[in-house]
Image (tube, rainbow, N blue to C red; front, top):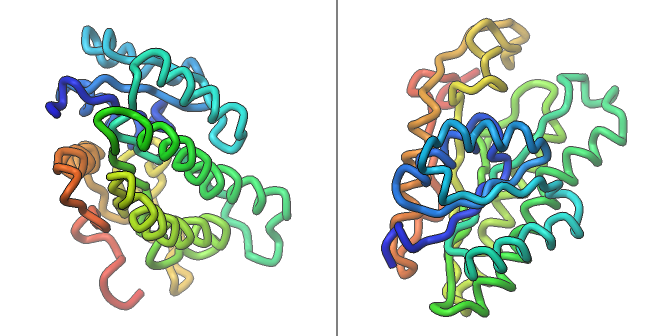
Length: 252
């Protein structure tokens, strides 16, 4: 199946990595469902797509809400008839507080959006992908470098991203019988509005504050495109895309 006939869905499509990936998919012929909490931000992404936006569908969605997720996938089914690619990208972080000072409601909010959200979307994607013709599809999870190592004061975000790795493996295994492939992209220091503070200085493991190298967010979008381009009998299970000189490899 060519990219021009494929349907993709991107959660968190209103900014950053989600926006860049959405634009890359549209520019490469996909029809794309843009999902996110902020309708205005989704429409801004669509405006950046120019004429390519005619192949897009915008759906305001709270991925932590089962009813909202069900409505998103039903709208996708009725509009396009199928789904070939789900990019589980939506995520949030908590304020950088000491672990012992983090309010329980903030912990639960991070888990709801970063972990329950991808689970709910994956569940609905399974239901659609296994019943469509031709059967199957691909799911790509945004894991982050935090799926491997934490930053200081990041317990909720890091815990969810470690858990995403488990969800990726389970999804890859359980999707086999439906011709559903699942992989994960772990991203380090992509230059987005959310990550802009990295350039001015962020806490390091040794207690210092240091600026960190960044990479163009389009590097991430192109990596997702590659993962999505594979036939369903091939899969990138895990890929790390990072700023070459960021403090990940080596002693902190």
